[in-house]
Image 1 (cartoon, rainbow, N blue to C red):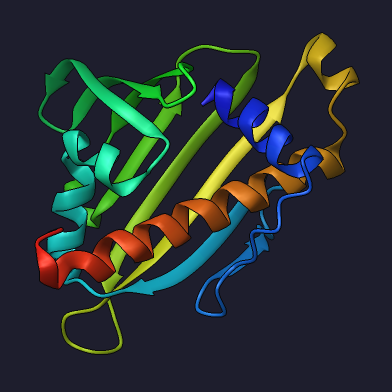
Image 2 (cartoon, rainbow, N blue to C red):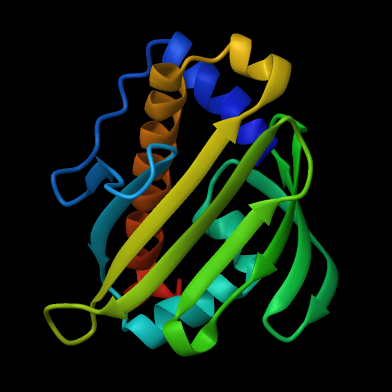
Amino acid sequence: MHKLITVALAIVLGGSSAIAAPEIRVYESRDDSSITEGDTVVAADADDAYRAASDYARWSAMFPDIRDVRITELRGSDARVTFVHTDGNRDNLHFRNQPAARMVWFEDTGGRAEVWAEIVFVPGPVAGTAVLHTRLYADVHGLASLFVSDGKLRNLRQQRVRDYLRELRAYFARGSRGAV
């Protein structure tokens, strides 16, 4: 996830024209200025969507920038996973999922920023759909905080939440053709 900030920074500085679909809502948390939240509805049952997202090997199909998934430790809902991105960067993540809440939760285990995210899958407004609610916490401390303003960090979080939700919507939209 520490690469998340670098990649997101490149997107923002590069003038990305990515625009969130109207079905994706991104907003700042009322509880913590270091958290950005987002919601969308996907074409999958909440239980099925949670199971798919808990299957780390599928993340390379869910998120196009992930080239390789390496599960280094798996103990029930707790896992250590390395994602190798198409640009060669690696994210070493620690997952602590909560199946009863249909929540995928992970944190970055390295880097200069404190980063964690959660994605909760709840039954949607129509049978066969799920509402995804995500929260992304990212904050930098120490020397790194001199180079990344709160506004820049907020913009990076917002872009990443939009990207997560857009990519998950696309993945589950393919569900009828074998994604789930």
